[in-house]
Length: 170
Ligand code: MG
Image (tube, rainbow, N blue to C red; front, side):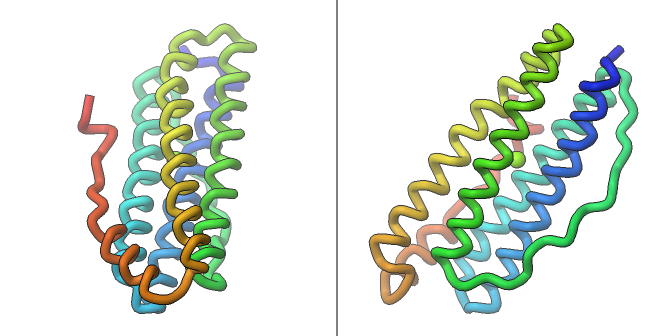
C-alpha cells in the first residue's frame, strides 16, 4: 500500500499534468488564432503528452492500490504576446514541472518508497528531454526574432511533430 504523503503528492501531480495539458491547449488556440497551424499542431501534441502523463500517474496510483482524487484545475493563461513569449512561458513552465518531479522523488526517498522512485525516474528523464526540446525551439525563435519568413518555415517543421503515447510504448 502506498504511503499517505506519496499518494497526496501523486494526486497533486495528476492535477499539475492536467493543468499543463490545458495550458498547452490554450497556447494551441492562440496559435490557431495567429494563423500558425504548425505551431498549433505542436502544442496539441504537447497537450496529448501531458494528458498521457496524467494517465501514467493515474494508472500508477490505482496500480498501487491508491485512490485517485481529482481536484479543480486552475485557470490557464489565454493571452500571449507572440511566438517567443509563448515558448519562454513554455520553458519556464517545464522548469517548474521539473522541480515538481524532483520534489516527488525527494518525498519517495524520504519515506523509502523504492517503487515510486523507480516510477519517478521515467519522469526525471522525460523532463530532461522536454526542457531540451523547448530550449532548442526557443533558441531558433530568438535567432529569427520571432518574425518573418523564418516563423513560417518553423511552422512547417513543427507541424510534422508526431505524438508517441508513453502509455502504449513499453
Ligand atoms: Mg508532463
